[in-house]
Amino acid sequence: MSVRIDIAGLRPEEVVVALSPLAELGSALHVLAEPVHHPGVRGWATAVSARLEPDLADRLCEADFLWTAAFTDVFMPYAGVPGRRTRPGATLAEELDLLDKLSDEQFVAAALEFTCGGPCPGPEPELLGDPGLRERALELAAARGPRQARFTRRLLDDPPAVRAWFRQLVLDCEEAFFADTWARVRGRLAADARHKTELLRRKGLSDMLTAVSPAIALDEEAALITVDKMIVGRTTTGDGGLLFVPTSLGWPHLLVLHRRDWQPVVQYPVGVPDAVDPPSVEQITLRLTALAHPARARLCRHLARGAFTTGELADAHGMTAPEVSRHLSVLKKAGLVTTRRRGRYAQHQLDLAVVARLGGDFIQGLLR
Image 1 (cartoon, helix red, strand yellow):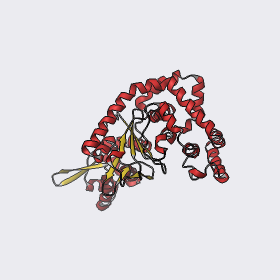
Image 2 (cartoon, rainbow, N blue to C red):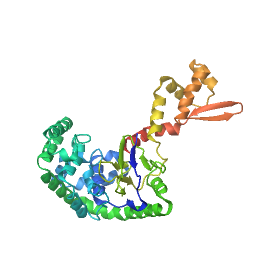
Image 3 (cartoon, rainbow, N blue to C red):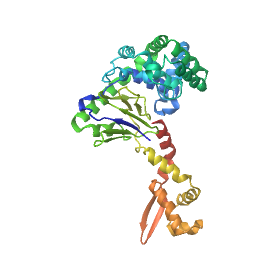
Image 4 (cartoon, rainbow, N blue to C red):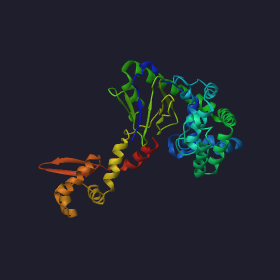
């Protein structure tokens, strides 16, 4: 599983690393809605939540599904501007002006993805004019809950009113807490953007992508960027550009905007905690599958207590040596068992550190 970005024909100067205050606000609202995803900034979330005025807190709850799972593409309006080369604005006001350049159909489709729990039920140009698509959107929203149903009806009935509501919400968040937050993190994000841009200029796209995240890989021959995530998606830069947007609040998320006909955007976290690089989705799947087999689980119980040869394991578990070898091969391929030589014998042992990290790795893989 992964998100793939086709970059055939993309020129180096069309790859841009830029700050986006509106995207950072989207990350901030997500943290406020789901602080458990972001233990490193839980103190910030607690402090901001405690000082929110009740009216603003109520309005944030009114449509928090727009940023609870991640956040809607409405927070990256530059990606949808025709031409697919627009850069983020320097301020929230400038980015809200970019939002005004999106058609009602674009705005509604981006918002419906979260109110309906998935991609909008039809092409953007037909969303507001097709009664069947409208009814389907309302059905999907109602299945998610009454708040989603009410918001979707408002969105479909009067897109300009919802756009005005969103603009005012953004401005009120800026006044209440985000101006201070942005002033504090902007310098750090700007320094990271300069570093990534210089890396791109001096060493090329592959090295820059590695610095952005070990979960991103470049196949230069295929002109394809692959982002290791537990979803399947595909987009293309086409005749547009490719944007990278740093965030100080995003870890462990690595977001990829891959909406059709929009400029691809990768929002990546800055200041990732010092730790072993998380395994790929494929490695996580291998490990979970390996441990799911009852015989291998019993072997792991034995191997957690010490190092044993294949013969010793076979005798202890009433299995043949070839059977044990096959199970050990699966565990070793998953990176769960290590083998060392002791004279003529090979001893196997469970890698307790890897197993101990598996829960955290799985959660990171889900959230990435």
